[in-house]
Amino acid sequence: MIDQQYFDDLVTSATARLNGDEILLVSAHTESTAFARFNDARVRQAGSIEQTTIDVDLIEGKRHTEATVQLSGDEVSDQARVERVLERLREQRAAVPDDPYLVINTEVTSSHHVGDNELPDRDQALSAIAQGAGDKDLVGIYTSGGMASAFANSLGQRNWFETSTFNFDWTFYLRADKAVKNSYAGFAWDDAAFNRKLDDAAVKLTALAREPIDLAPGDYAAYLTPAALEEVVGLLTWSSFGARAQRTSQSALLRLLNGQGELDPSIRMSEDTAHGVAPNFQEQGFMRPDEVVMIDGGKAGDPLVSPRSAIEFGLSPNGAAGDESPRSFAIAGGDLDADQALADLGTGLYVGNLWYTNFSDRPACRVTGMTRFATFWVEGGEIVAPVNVLRFDDTVYNMLGSQLKGLTSEPEFVFDNATYGQRSNNSVRLPGALLEAMRFTL
View (cartoon, rainbow, N blue to C red):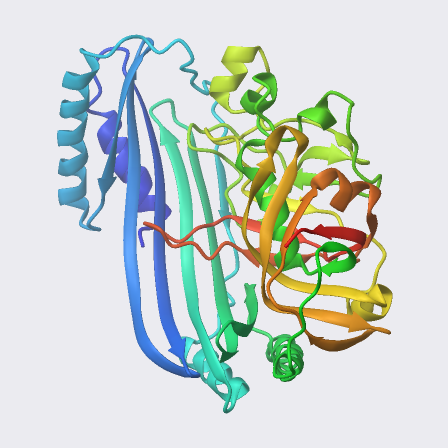
């Protein structure tokens, strides 16, 4: 993992090799990650990754070409590598047309953030996991370490955002399709908090051993855990909040935007950069505000606007990435106590997880998917038995609108566990949701 000085020196060296009116943009992701895979509560694979990748954009007028470079960590060889990339991009740029939506942040806004490193010793964390699992079949992956995002341009802007986090994504496995899935993530390890999650999962694992029941299709009262709710609202984050999707009528929230649909007045969805782990700037150097409120009081708020959409639709950019998806998505909590979720549910379905979610009718914001892992039938506020797999098919306007009874008061912080190419710095903060009725079709 490189430091900010290394990155600044690299960009300064590259800037000295520009010709004429060329402008250089460089963004970077660097990480130092330790990982361990568990099976049957034992570490089966452990290792570490040190890597840095930069994206280089060489601009002249309205023409530009881009390249991705993997750095070695050796300053001399990395600077030489970037110099060769600039030469290649310069040759390629001569053959590309003008980009009408190219926009450059000419207002130099530098920033620096390095979060406290309070990570536990890896062996300490792994020992706590193994001891906490006891004789249960625990399967999961633990990752921890520092990572940083950076931006710089030849106009003098410098941005650095560094955090140190851990993420443990795990499952207590019983048999066949019966398992209890959970996660524990944060900045500093708390044995008490982790043990509470273990104890809760152990109770549900015991309940899973009971004879499962089949439910007929129909409408049932339901409690969705934050993990289950994430599978529903995660579909919205793909493309529903972006200015481009909204202006071209491709957003799944079109009825909300047109005033033909509404959510419960308690619903507030935002891009909450101030409380996430994603940087407060995007890949072209435009700064992100602390918060962009996308739905407020159940009604449409502000879209996420990338620089390109700002040019195309005559808007002001607000730090959105090119795909205009939130990086630090949050739903505000309500007034329900998560510890009383079963009691508040009374009789109905406790839904621990969902999967295979997708739109069944995108313009209507209708979502379908399957229950997964720990889903239980509850009577009198007590778990009766696990429920065999069900398919739900319902609209977000029902689930977070007309059928919503309430949200839990303390949203849960969940880190994205994706490691495709690099460790993700996306996150969500979501409450649990209590529904008067949720439609199950199979």
